Image (cartoon, rainbow, N blue to C red; front, side, top):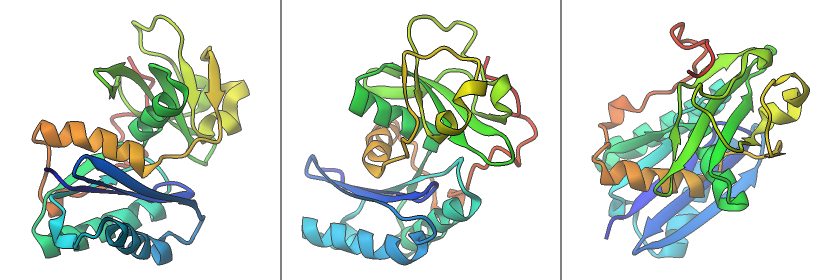
Length: 226
């Protein structure tokens, strides 16, 4: 049986999750600015509950952003350190996708417009549809002013808003939604769910390819999904 470890520190939330023998364990705390102190103890506690050594882990999944620069870097540093030491692959997962997956798990929705407050009067934006249990990107992820947020061109049916971008900018986002969870943050349990799909597709990469995705650094993507 595959054993996967997942961790996320891209937002105010710090969370870890473990899949072993088909069972999922997770810890989740909203602890702004304490991620660096808490992440490794949370991992150790989770492994202790499962009765597993770290060496039992087959791969490590992590939230690759977008999110807070410092938070994403903390995750990258820990993941690379563990993966290099264990000689295990890593599974980078979008934090916007994780938000969409959590909205599906908690609300049962199948189309999600995920938005994270990016500061500087912008949002990290991505639209996702459920396909065979996995929230998959429709269009592109982008960082943009809330007024420029849009659904994919082929959008139909109801969409649900998830993430702190909705809490800050709902009145300025010109996208109709059936409901919203404006305080929703990424959870490693949902990151783990997405990582299982990625692992099954053989998408693990070497530890040195554990790179952050900030979007703001990428001049090719500051446009609405299409």
